Length: 530
Image 1 (tube, helix red, strand yellow):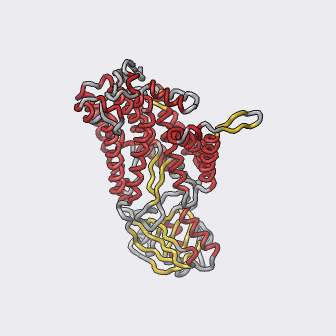
Image 2: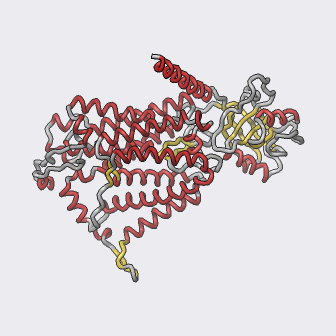
Image 3: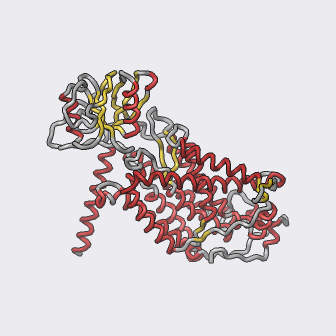
């Protein structure tokens, strides 16, 4: 009982610390820096007021001046009546802003050396300064400093700002994630949907070489994946400023390959055979497909343009195209054999997110996941995510969702759709298989549909908490319970828990009454997951 008491006290202490961190972020006072002159540098940037200064003051049409020395750890001069822009480092935030105040400045803006912004803390026993003290991220700081370097006078205002609690970009990102998972699952279940015989004949009619069988993961991979991912995250935590460029290169390669496979598969299913089979010859190489050549040039071109212009305003479009193509290909080429392996992978990913986001600060002095996701001090952003610019906000900013929050649930949901087809569990996408099913079978909801509803619910829950706390959330914290629990409850209710858990889904493929190509599968009996 004493051990349980100690565990209970420890859990309460951790929950209080986490709650205090969430409330601290939720109480943050945002400011809006509005550069008005010169017109060529006009722009609006988000900042956060820090408690070391006056959090209730706004400044109208004041000149911005770069601190000299830039870190502002020594007395300043020539800044009277101006808003001082200083760099982070070497001395406390309060010292920088106090030096600005003593020199007659009316405000102090500190440029962080990372992409995040937070309240600049100080000694709670010290009286706050009279001038406002704000923090901006390194991207905003770079824009301000470039403007001051190019122009003699840069004038702007600093006002209190309340961001809209909800932005339409969040909904768009949710729809992108749900659509990607559903599309990838549908592609993954091609053989089960069409039947092995018809699927093989269709592939042969395309004139293509037989596709390699998808890689089937086991439970040892699930454990190993989380261990390797954790070790990799720690390495990135310490060396992200250098390794971020390796990640950019890997993303370009994976995205280009995914885009190639996705487009060639789509083209093979839609274009005339004459186009698909068109070839040309090269010396020492032989015949090469025109379609593959064109798609390769396009895929590599998209990846190359994104790699070169990844910080441009349009780069998010190319990043999302590459990311979605990679995710679709992953669901097509990698499979989970049963819910046992899927459950191990999902639960471990669930714990992985919780530890590296919320608990890692107790061991590494800051959130490992947050530092890696924001690119550290490299000035680069992590590419392994989907981005959508905020649509209802005048200031720069993006809604983000990590690829892992789509990939891992996507593999699980793809398995459920394959299982549904093999067991004739439900009507899916209106395919012709439903023609042979009884009314009771064809209209009942299947495991795939339940998981998709759960996935949508998990994303919505994550976004609601994000809006309420103004703090980035690990999406798998909400997704995993929503996709696992309802499916297992439904399986238990239908007496299919063992089949779903082991993946031993054996059924007679449906025979359409119209005598179509499915007739040839009538006597086949398949078990793809043993």
